[in-house]
Image (cartoon, rainbow, N blue to C red; front, top):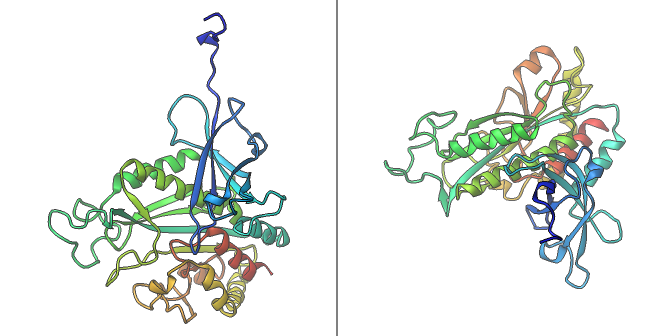
Length: 358
């Protein structure tokens, strides 16, 4: 007993939840593991050491040469952990053992693109739709009254027969706010058990709204949603068409602007130029906007057909929607309605930066 540390001297060290994207195809997913730090708190990204993992178990390496490197690049508080001490979520980029970015590392590509476009000051916001599942069917299907009636009364609905999973949604919003994310809203979506949250520019001057920071936060918000739902025994689906038939799909509508598009008097002209670039790149970009996108972009259910590209003022059936206020003010932002719910925010951001900033 004499060598045992006095219990009054014991101090709880901080925990860091390292999260990264695996090499799954066609849709990457979140992987995570926990590290106990050698300090009680962290104030900067350098406080989180590089770490490693078995890439052969994440489709990122072969067993004969399986070590991959996690490089911390962004962190926030982790309210999911409620025990004593300080806790963090740490976004990591994946690197090869020779120091080169892994081929699955889309964040690195976005970072390089933004470094080349300094001065354009892009802002971005994502509207993430998702669907709760219980085993193989949407949460709450069927309820006490049978299967849901045709869609119509569920969007932004209230009541036990209109919404399913609100406890999860509210808890997710709470942890995202306490983590310090630029989280700016939630709502029930058109299909019952389908919801949406938004992360991005929300008019707070002290917050970073650049595509890299907001894309990092989107992945953290997705991670936190899955973690909260896991506690309730519910699956989160980011499928673009979670239910066949006359039901809305799920997307990740993306709002975007730059210094040029926000300039009073000339901003709308700048937006129109970006839209022309997006039109030229449509067939290339659409391949980066999510797997199974053809099941969602059918020309029905508030979408433009995947084989077409068009823009319109206040038109939710267009590829690119110009908000009415943007049209009236001749400046502001535009909305890319093509990205699917399972799209990678890093890749979507890169497509928009390329079209708007070069």
